Image (cartoon, rainbow, N blue to C red; front, side, top):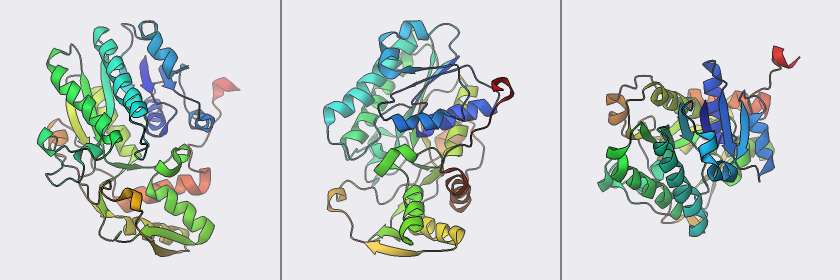
Length: 322
C-alpha cells in the first residue's frame, strides 16, 4: 500500500492518477474534506480507502504497517497569503514532523512536498543550499523549517526521506484552490467571462519557473522507484518564463480575448517572487533524465482539461463497477 496525504488536493490527486497509470491502486488517500468540493478530484481515481487527516495522525500505527511501501505527503495549507502563523505551523510543520517521525519509526519511506518559496526573493540563487534560503512569509517559513529539520535528522533515517521543492505548478484538478489556483486557471476564466486576461503592472518582467503538474508527478514517481535517493531537490523546469506568455498562449488557444494591465496589489509588495528559476543540477545528478514540458505545450494540455472537462480528470466507468 502507498499512502498519499492531500490525495484529494491538486498535486496529490495527480500523483494518485499517476500511480493508477502504472497499474497501482492499493492507495490510501488522506485528506481534509471540510472544503467539500474537493471530493470531485477523487471521482476518476482508483484507490483502496479514504481517511480524514486527523484520524490518520491519531491512529497512524494502524495505517502504517510493514506492507506500506511509502508515505507521499502532499497535504498542507498552501495559501501563501494566510497570516495565521499558529495555523500554518500546526498544519505544515508540526503535522509533517509527526508524520515523518512515525514513518521513520515504522521504516516507511517518506516523500514530501516542499516549496521554492523558501528561496524568498532569490537574490542568492535557487540551488538547494541553506545559504540561498530566505522565506518571506509564514507559509514559506513553515516549509523551510521542516526542510531544516530533515537535514538535521537525515543521517539517522533508516529508509528514504526526500523532499521536492515545487516551483510554480499548474494543471488539472486545481479548481478548489480559489485565489491560490495557478495563473493559467485564472487567466482562462477571466478570458472566458470578460474577454480580458488581467496582468499585474510589470508582468512582462516577472519571470517564473512554471512546471506542468504531470512533470511533478513524474519526479515523485522517480523517487518512488529509487528508494536509495534521499535529500531535498528542486522540482522545476530550470527555465523562467513570463506571465504574459501564458496569457497570450491562452488567447491563441481560445481564439479570443486581450490582455489588460492592472495595478500591482499593495498587499503583495515585499512578499512577491518576481523571478524564480530552479537549479536542476542536483535532480539530474540523482538520475532524473526526463525532459520537462515546455510552457506553451503544458498550457495547451491544461486548456484541454479546462475546455472539455471543467479542469478535472474525466470520469470513466470501469468494468468492475458495471
